[in-house]
Image 1 (tube, rainbow, N blue to C red):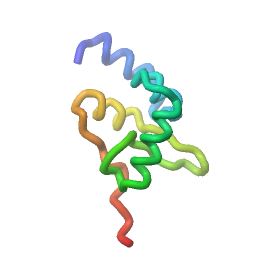
Image 2: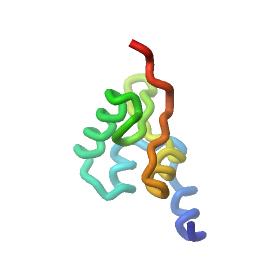
Image 3: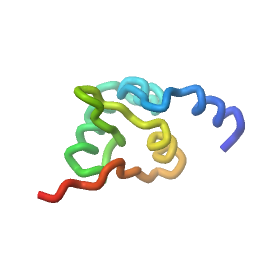
Length: 82
């Protein structure tokens, strides 16, 4: 990764709002929320990696960076057995 790209990522908060992650990915806000829901409902196998913090959804910066640079998802918590 280039140094200027590193600087851009460092300037982001550790936990982004879904809207902020959408802006980074250059996708619509509604698409980002759909992907966040897919991630939560699918146990982290697809979508936008998010954590629920109280009633808010947050995207960890490291998980977004990993997704953008590798195309792979980070499972932020193991799936809960049924």
